[in-house]
Length: 235
Length: 235
Image 1 (tube, helix red, strand yellow):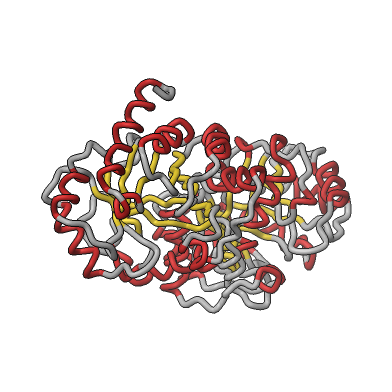
Image 2 (cartoon, rainbow over the protein chains, first blue to last red):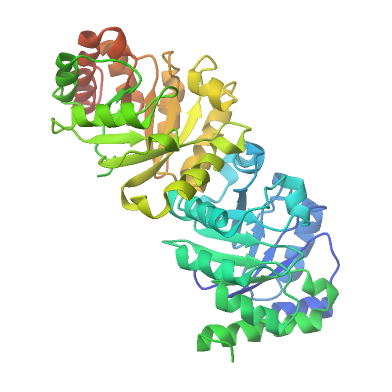
């Protein structure tokens, strides 16, 4: 499974709670995939539990590996974040190498993709944990996009505003700049209107926290994204 | 120009001196390419000077961009090192992004390749400058090789022992581990015998300092590498 067809994705946090009813609605929402992962509190056990629950449905399911301890087999795809805008090498290559060291021959490389994260909201948990240099102007953001897309040739370039709705003009420019990668956008999408704006700017729209704040409203983001992608404009 | 056919490469340091006679012998030695670059003292001016001198010959010439200030147009290929085994993010992605910021539209991306450096000799100038974590055992070295080759999918994985002849068994294992990249080896090759051993282990053998110590002996490394590559064994 590759990510080329992903327009809308729900991100589920194993450290947070969803009822069976909510989870069923999410899995049958028409989203292109689920990504399981989080910045803190993710363990092997809560990841296995969530995987078992979503496996009752047909939606593809990827694991985003922020910590090697939560590497659970049985996902359709594994996503490995490299944080590009940090001075802490451990978050770019170091922890990734430690993860390889621990799992070695068990790693399903043919189902593993690197994500080049550019974290742009200083308030985000991920920014705090990775000591990301979030104060990038647009030109510096685009320079990191080039490093990820043209130099490192990563398959996914991820603009992460987690917790805050980002600058869609910057996201749009980043996507236009890409030579080969796919632009993921995540952060602060609470409703259909924001999802539609993000769908105009990015290749793939990621909706996460909204599921835990108001899941019924969050479900409307699927149709909003699909409509924009079909029409090529806000409708 | 790509690096797929490179078996032997001479690395020339713009901050060091070579007579015209020596430079001619190097350029007409049968080496597959010259790589121009160095860890210190490299400037725009001394890089331009060296390029002008080697351009009288037909040998392909690449620039290894350790510092954005020395980005000189007119090379056949540009190599951008990312040091994988450092805790200093600046040497993995930060300086690369600054370089993109400075040169932006002038960058010939179609002639630019990333090199994933793993620096293994603590005494090397490059290790000191980049604060590389050189104390890697073989398994950790191979984990970084996987990160570079399978996760980041870099075209070149470079085991750098600069100043010391390395562990050829480790180099051989690294090459066997590769899924798609090409393994460069550099460090401490003074004569034909060491070059032959390195040619058995690596895809591409880089000879640098020896040119400045005893260039006549260094020239014999070309035939030594070519013979091993042709025969598939020491001869």
